[in-house]
Length: 117
Length: 117
DNA sequence: CAGTATCCAAACCGATACTG
DNA sequence: CAGTATCGGTTTGGATACTG
Image (cartoon, rainbow over all chains, first blue to last red; front, side, top):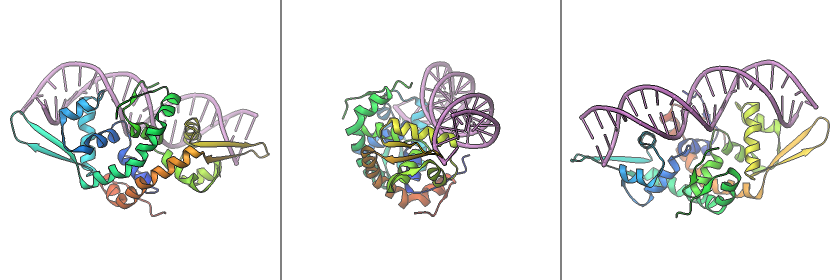
C-alpha cells in the first residue's frame, strides 16, 4: 500500500504509464488488437509474468480491453479502450521528444538506442 | 548499470521522466528558477535525499540547470534548460489527460486526488 | 496458447543523523 | 541553507517451472 496523493494531472498520468513496459505496450496496441503471443514477440525481453501482470494493471486502469475467445487452442486479444487511445494520443509529443533526443539520452545513460520505427 | 535498449522514443522519454518525483519537479520549475528550499516546500513529502538525488539525475540528463551562488548562507538555484522546457511542453497533453481522468485513476487505485492547480 | 506460482535480485524510496 | 552518508523497508522486475 502506498498512501499518497496526486499533486496534479501529470502526477497521476505518470503513475499510470510509468514503469518499464506500459508505454511500450500502449504503443504496440496503437494499430489494433493483438494476441498475447504477438505482444510477447513485439516486446523482446519481457517475461511471461510481467506481460500478463502489466496487461492486468492496464485493464484495471481501463486503458486496455481484454477479450477472450473460447476456442481451442485458447485465444485472447488485447486492444485499446477509448481512454487508452486518448492516452496514446496525449503521449505523441512525448514520443517525439524522445525520438529527437534518444541518442543523447542513451549515450548519457550507457544504453543502446534501437533503430526501429 | 541496466543493459537495455530503447525500442522507441517514448521508451527513452519515460526512462527520463519516470519515477515518483521527476515530472513534479519539472512542473514546478515551469515558471522560473527555484531555490532548493523552495522546491522542497513545493513538494511536500519528498525527502532531502530524493530531492537532491533526482535533481542530480535531471541535471545529468541536461533538462535541469544548477547554478551555485557563492554567498553566505549558500544559495543554489535550479532552472529548466532549453531541452527541459521542450520536455515540459511535450508533457502538457499528458498532464491534461491526467487532469481529466485523475478522479477515476485515483479511485481505482485508492489514492486521494489533490485539488490544487 | 494463455496464464499461474514461486522464488529471488535489484531498484526505488524514505528516515535519520551529520557536514561545510 | 545546501548537501552527504548510511541504513533498511517496500516495490518492481525477472527466471523458471508448471497448469488448463
